[in-house]
Image 1 (cartoon, rainbow, N blue to C red):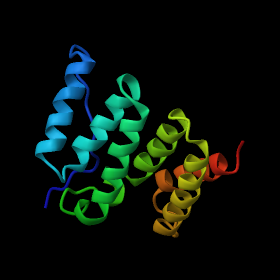
Image 2: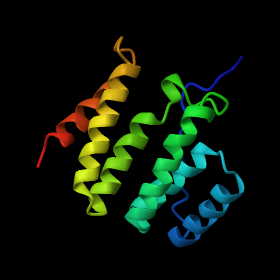
Image 3: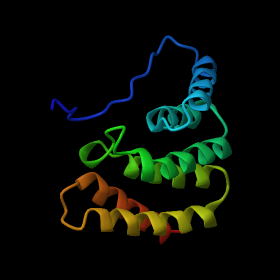
Image 4: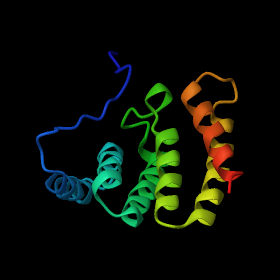
Length: 138
C-alpha cells in the first residue's frame, strides 16, 4: 500500500484569512470527525482568531484523535499529537489561562513520553521536553 510518508498542511497566501477561517469553520461543522480540518483551523486561529476558540478546536482535535486518527492515517510519523498538545498549551497561555496551560503541559508531556518510550519519534520527545519546561516555568 502506498501510504504517505508525511502529511503537510498548505496555505494559500492570496486567500483572505477571515474568509479562510470561515471556510474551515464550515468544513469542521460539516465533517465532524475531520482532524486535519480542525488542525488547520487551529493554525488559522493562531494568527487571526480568538485564543479561546483555538483552545476549543484543539481540545476537540485531541479528543477525535483517540478514535479517528488511524482511519485518517494520522499515526506514527503522521501523528498530530505533539503539535496539538503544544498548540493547546500556547493557546491556553495566550488566553490568559497559565495555570490551566501548565496543568495541560504536565499531562501532555507524560502522555507523549509514554507514547514514545523507545525514542523512535523525536518530535514527540522534543515536544515532551518543551511541555515539561513550560510546566515547570513561571
